[in-house]
Length: 117
Image 1 (tube, rainbow, N blue to C red):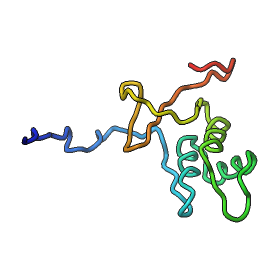
Image 2 (image 1 turned 30 degrees about the horizontal axis):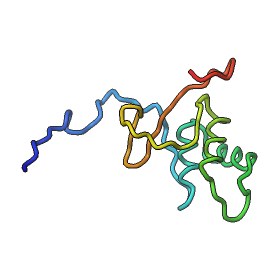
Image 3 (image 1 turned 90 degrees about the vertical axis):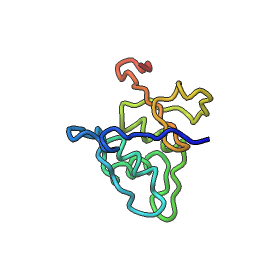
Image 4 (image 1 turned 135 degrees about the vertical axis):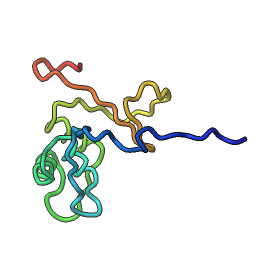
């Protein structure tokens, strides 16, 4: 069965006036993807995120591992975002954005009274 041809709107390009809300922070090594992602989402530098991660329990020297729990703690402490543990969503309509196998659901936390908005 042949599939229908698809047409990309704008030749697959973002509109010229589009400005990303995030400034990409590159990885500094081969294993610090979550540090770079945390820096990108929080608008902080990689060094600021690393200092926070160390404060929250990451090793300061030698090999380190930033797991999902420490990632969530860093995001919570550096941003107004509320984070929760990873959940498999069986309904695509419940996710806000989906890339490959990664699902990012964002909810803002009310800093004044701690409630999720």
